[in-house]
Amino acid sequence: MMIMREEIKFGITVIVIFLIGVGIGSFFERPSVVFEEIGELNHQNSETAGIQLKELAESKIKLLAVDTKGNGILTDLSVKAVSGEGRLLVDVDNLLFWVDTQQSIQTAKSVAEEYLGKKIDNVDLTYTIKVDNSSVVGGPSAGAAFTAATIAALQNKTLKKDVVITGTIESNGSIGAVGGIIPKGEAAKKGGFKIFLVPDGEKSFVEYRRIEDCENIGSVRICNINYKAVEVNVEEEIGIKVIEVSNIKEAMNYLL
Image (cartoon, rainbow, N blue to C red; front, side, top):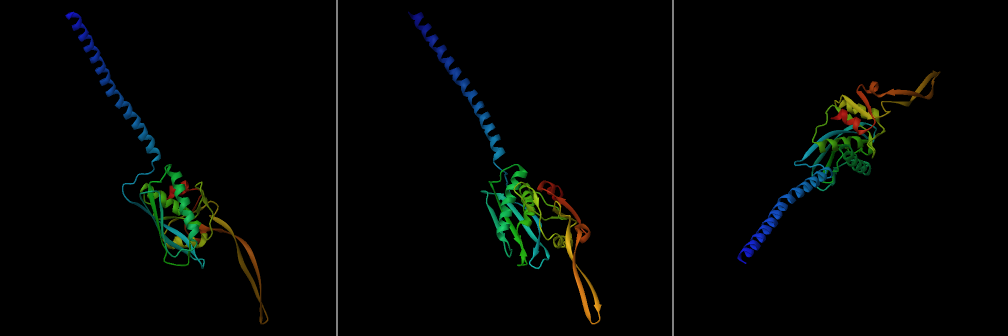
């Protein structure tokens, strides 16, 4: 009976050791699986978490505008990006067509997301436009510049100081036509810029110019007024390098 009791004890001990061994083995195996799952989850989150900014990033660009008298004017835009909650903050004074400007900024953000391939819901963007002239007309024509500055701020890059752009920004990233190309180009040249980026098809255009043909008949001066279609080459007209761009990707190749 003693032998059988010892054998029973021995058998129980072996079973207990075996179960403990299996438990220990499972203990060391399971965390490795969990760590792999967490690692995969983190990898997935990194693709959708947006852009991470540890410090404030800022980009600056000149905006081309036209005042109520038709004169081209340069204004200052700065875009600051910092980790936040996806808010768009705007600081603008003395700018006409404010609603159009707001819409351009909202479109600029969505196009920047598409360009970078990342969401920026964890970044606050602050747009500051300094306008000294209260008659400056803003609006959609600065959309391309808003987008370029947004992209540069999110990448913490500096835009070239000798390149300036005008054009609307569409939701698909294309740059749309604007008016006032000549006065804007004149302002760009006066501001020292070497390259003027314009929407596709606006490097030259047809303009109807007034032509007076006058003669004196006795004491009376008689004038015939006609309008003649003239093709205007912007580059020749203002004496600055003009390049057409059809979308924001093309524009960034010159601006960065």
